[in-house]
Image 1 (cartoon, rainbow, N blue to C red):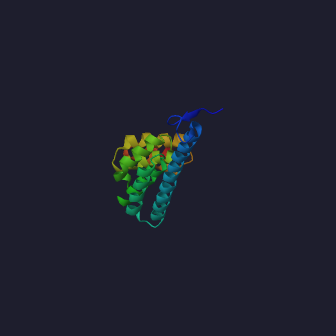
Image 2 (cartoon, helix red, strand yellow):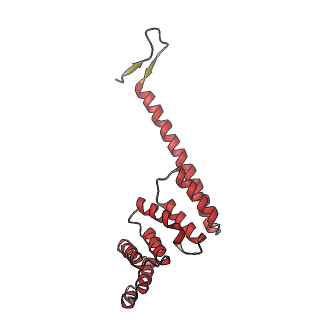
Image 3 (cartoon, rainbow, N blue to C red):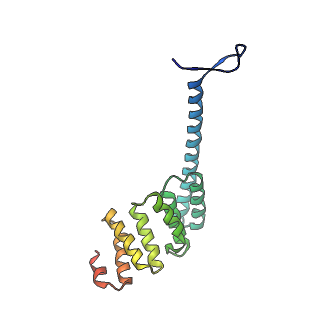
Length: 167
């Protein structure tokens, strides 16, 4: 039977069942976490809508808020990096921090690796771009953007035959 925790002495008005108290506290903690998850999801959904309507600054602000509320998923930093890349005029140059954060959370995500390769291409870091693109191809061989980034990196290194053989 459940252990009873007595509060006070014999004159105490009642007894509290310890397992019931633990269950109530656990339920409250789960409800709070679920509330944060719902709110972060709502904020992220708004940011996704902003991306659809090309309001990249607004989307970046909302993705940052969603990540502050619940920093559990790599999808938000990836989306934030995409928004920042578009703010910077199409190059992921200004999104290095978001790309690195997304990679730390999901190191084998080919889309994040491609975004990192594109960033390094924009910065003329061709060798690093080639490494990231190669990893992306290993993870998702059919991802055309990974092949394009790898080919562009080889062109940047003046390795034209390798660039042509990527596809």
